[in-house]
Image (cartoon, rainbow, N blue to C red):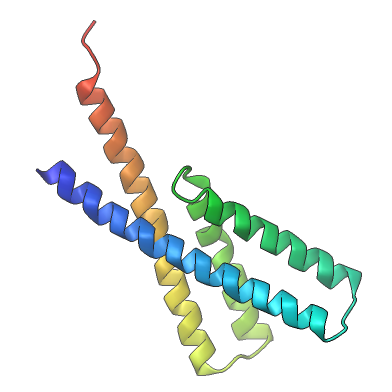
Length: 130
């Protein structure tokens, strides 16, 4: 029974992480749309936006299948957060939203790692003895 409750909790954590990643992707795509709509045609900014959007799309699409998307998102989150707080000097609501996103990504990475470990234990207990 403990296996099932652990798997259920980890699955909920993964859902939180994936929803956070989807929200980040939506915010990124809206930002890219606004940048292109303002007539800003800086090739460097456009390339950066395409790269970030592509990575987020890949991470969202593969989030539940592999471990790396959740770990990639939680690894790069502090870079963007520190940049926004230290260099851009964003307001308190944006800081709180960023912390909430970080917590969601952390839960997602923890849930993916737990699901992977639980699945390995389940497979080890089911495998036939030779």
